[in-house]
Image 1 (cartoon, one colour):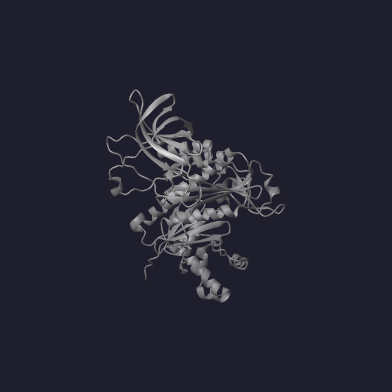
Image 2: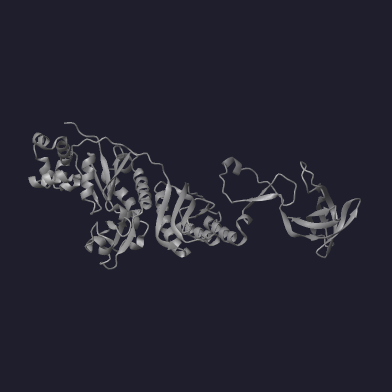
Length: 505
């Protein structure tokens, strides 16, 4: 007897359309909910949760029939949200095995993992299944997991245990005993075969497995052999693993157009929570979040929020989104929203025993967002000098924390002089001797020039015909009380005027 080396873990999600809708609507999970499919007036219920089933609602009911029940939330089926939920499940399962195969059966969705050799990373298969089920529940999805050495046996057992949302294990070689009490409905029989087995009095997989193989093949053909192998848990399977790229994206279609930012942020809060859970499962943090809003006027509203450091602080992300939407509100009502995040690595800072505590980076991001909302997007950032001698020869770039190597961080700091620009420049009276400033009056105080540096021509460029009409002088002056003043003066040659444009620290 050959011992099988295959081990499969099947994750089975029952009522997948309803669970994918309720995943981002936690306030509705405790209420009876029904998902409708089709166009009015031919809508029918395609999926529902446990609370709705307890009221007597079943799949296939029309909207008129459902409206006879009180306190039932009716949602429209969203293929976009189902695809986003499938991506989240595959991403979560991919953390436990690189070999995945997924499929759908009616209103259910399943994912089978090849977990051979995973014991060294996650322990016994039972421990792996419990850890995976815990992460799935964190996504807001209820599921069951079955483990067995046969692919089809694990799928059949997980399908019957879906309502328990627990872990079931088929012992090695015990597939036939584990599948014996299961009903024939787990095999998705055709109407003809279901009627035939009903006439024969066959109701369970054990009764099907007990039928003689040759007689079954003579009556049903090779399909009879396939069904008997499935009932015995001996049907071979060619595993076809998926190759899905890692992406952090959540989509949600709103039931009604939303204009209030509070309602929009309430929805975004749940989506951010899901993104953070998915990123943290791979030891990532969110580096940036792209918000795409589909509006009622058929347009779209795109925004990007990027803090200084990657983080998984959900209140911080929510506050940054709030400040960004307040500064750039959508011009029309919102029909759907998509959150796409870029993963990054969270920063760790180890301080010494006597080092002062540093402020939280999140506070700086919120402060900058509030300042940006007041002064504008282009008026805040890090000043970067341009390759020019013109006045105001700099540009603003967003604040970024760059990785500095250990060698660079140990270099001796360079001493730099800061120039504080005076806006607008103030007029001054200057006494000139030998074409150089000798003394000047600034803010009612007379200063005598000790040292002069210049002049430098401060307007125009060498590659064009602009007139060089401004001279820049850097001066070190002293007042009567020996107070030193290091400053920058501009001399307009065309108008003959002098202006104080900056003070050196």
